[in-house]
Amino acid sequence: MATQGTRRKRTAGKKKAASVSTALIVACLGGALLIGAGLGWWGASHLAARPAPPPRPSAAMPPLPPPAAEPALPAAPVEPAPPPEVASLPPVAEIPSAVPAWRAHALPFVPVPGKPMIALVIDDMGVDPRRSAQVIALSGPLTTSFLSYAQNLPKQAAASRAAGHELLLHMPMEPSGSGYDPGPDVLLTSMGEEAIRARLRKSLAAFSGYVGINNHMGSKFTADPAAMRVVMHELRGDGLLFLDSLTSGKSVGAKVARAEGVPALSRDVFLDDDPQPAAIRVQLRRLEEHARKTGAAVAIGHPRDTTIEALKAWLPQLNAQGFQLVPLSALAKAKHGE
Image (tube, rainbow, N blue to C red; front, side, top):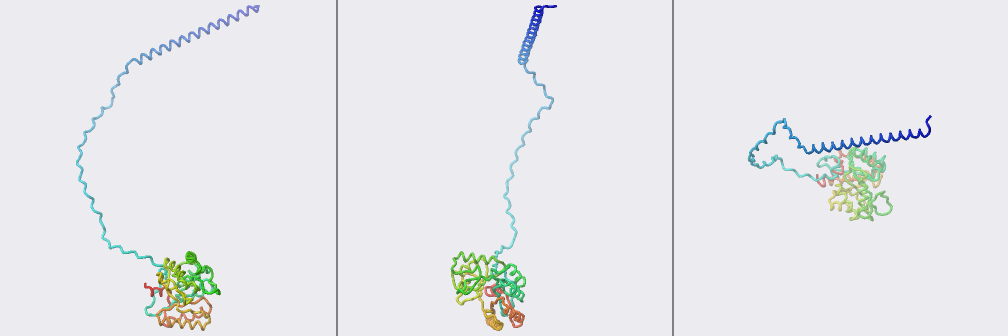
């Protein structure tokens, strides 16, 4: 059996032999690497020193020589363009100015020449729908003047026009004295120009299709030239006419309207200041007399029971008595020209 010392000697011998083998392997690998690197350097240097081989001739056809440049042709002379053809047209006619609203909204009507004309205006329309509807049902053509604060104003006004009547705006204006109520949106002499203009514009916008305005009350306002001038400026700009209800003998409405270029008419007869049937019949006779005398007359009435009943009896006989009932615009055309 081997002793402990013998075993130690064998182990040491094995380790020494392994170390020698490892060293030999490393030495061999290193030498191989050195030889390979040397060969690579030698080959690369010789290849770099050799001249590049000449390019092989291409099998493609040699390029053709460029074509000879064609001689430039002399430029053709530029002839001036012929003048544009102008069609032979008639001279342009002048464009007429816009038709004023009072003519555009006028009820189509052709009066009978030489026959006295009566325009019958019914004021205060719209605030009493039942009686207003009875007026609309009368034979026409009437001229129905609607208050700007009437109920369902556009609908009522449209119904009146559809029935063959002409339209006015009945504009509230300041009365004299404190015992009268002209209603809302009244024009006052104490108001400045802008306030009058704004209130009038509000009422004018309440509905459409009217030929102009007439005053509701207004005995104080229509006597004020400065205040009426503001109103006429607006009417002229809108192409509307003015009917002076003549609630006062001091009114300057028609005078200011003419000065401002606004077509104007004035009331001749009030039918129902006295609402009694007999009094209304007297006023109707006065209306006829004025129409015979002057060829035309303007009457103003209201949607009252006695007035409506009197008109129901009077209107059907009017033509037979030698008169013609006309819209207000027909009198304006006769006065101011077609």
